[in-house]
Length: 161
Image 1 (tube, rainbow, N blue to C red):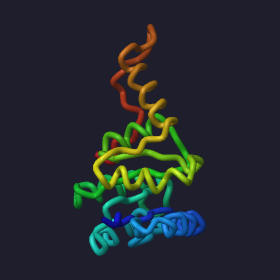
Image 2: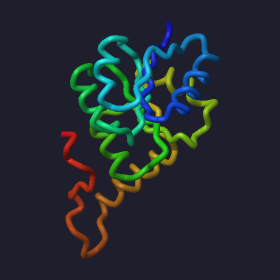
Image 3: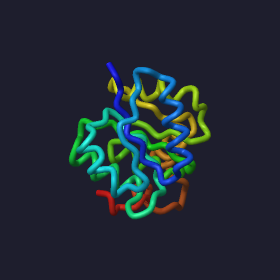
């Protein structure tokens, strides 16, 4: 089985590097590339990828907005956030939207093809740093500091819901 991958990143160098990385894996095919989130829906409709690697910060429509729209239109597609930035709000939002993973561009590139295969097979791919941020976030909600505001206030943007 060939895993069909769509790359969404506004940096041509990143897209090129990912395309070359996957070219070394005969079972992974890059079927489309998008430079901003607004291109993702049409490209996914046209190419029917198994996995979308989605950057967060892109022009026109960011990766979280694109993830929300894509999963509403094609819930069978598996989205993995692949970004250079990690915040609790972004990781929580990605998880809430249904992303199958959150990886950092600083993670080992050698592991990325196997992570894509895992996600395509129905698994998840969360970097250790993203897992730690999510665990810390949920622990702080479960046991808020004395005198703190409501632990249920979500600091992530609600525009995606």
